[in-house]
Amino acid sequence: MAGEVIFEFRRIGNSVKVSAVDPVSNTEVSIVGPATAGEHALKMAALRKLNFVLNRRGQPGG
Image 1 (cartoon, rainbow, N blue to C red):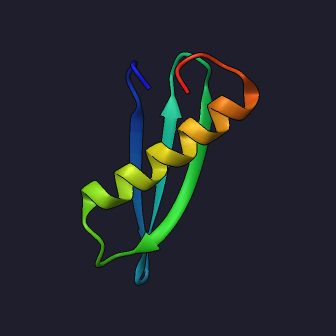
Image 2 (cartoon, one colour):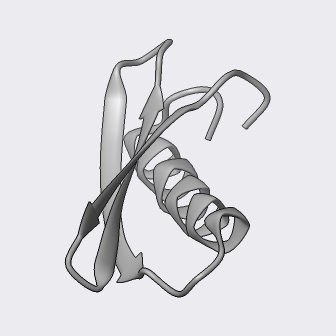
Image 3 (cartoon, rainbow, N blue to C red):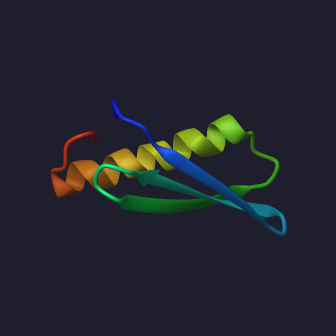
């Protein structure tokens, strides 16, 4: 992914929901991980999922 990605973190108990949004295509994905995981690891997991979804849709940036 070459462009900008917007991340949102929301803590839910012992977990963190991370949303990643591609502003060009308005594609949004979410993952849930442990609250003890580092921010970078959670971002990378959400980014991998976003890239996967964009590639499946055949959209640029994936």
